[in-house]
Image 1: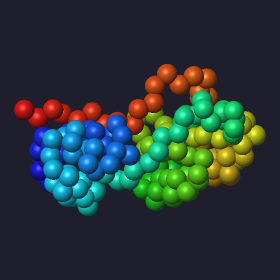
Image 2: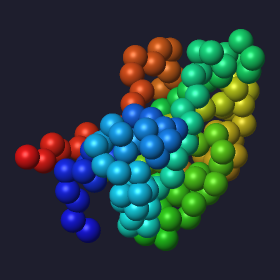
Image 3: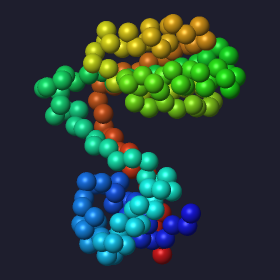
Image 4: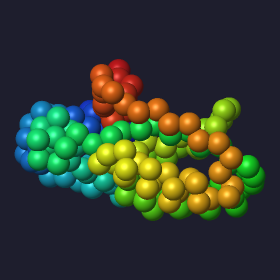
Amino acid sequence: MDLDETDLRLLDLLQSDASLTNEAIARRIHISPPTCLRRIRRLREAGLIERQVAILSTDRLAPVIGHGLQAIVEVSLDRQGSEEQQAFEQRVIADPSVQQCYRVSPGPDFVLVVHVTDMPAYLALAQRLLTADANVRNVKAYFSVHRAKFDPRIPLPARP
């Protein structure tokens, strides 16, 4: 799929605020609302826009639900065959506490970003996903004490 400057501007704007109305987006990109709607629909159908979500403020939610515990977890498997990696990956991505899962190289086989309510919840997650799996050789967890930046935006090139 070829992307022109308007498509890139649409994608960039939607990464900033996907809650804007079609009219507001069209006005900011300087195109007509029907053209805007058609282009966004095409970008969705092409799979460039996977989904639209709300990013919640952990600090503002903390008084209501608690701060929770965020960890970055490195996991090394004993057997790294395709089937073993896929089986592990399917199990961890099905768990709602796992926010992100990456196969990486070199180093560990997987890096997970997990969010749980507290340390007992992390221990339950570790038991459920890691300790109970005979193929998990090594686990190293890093617990977040401060988040300096979180931005899911993908930098897009500017087109002349």
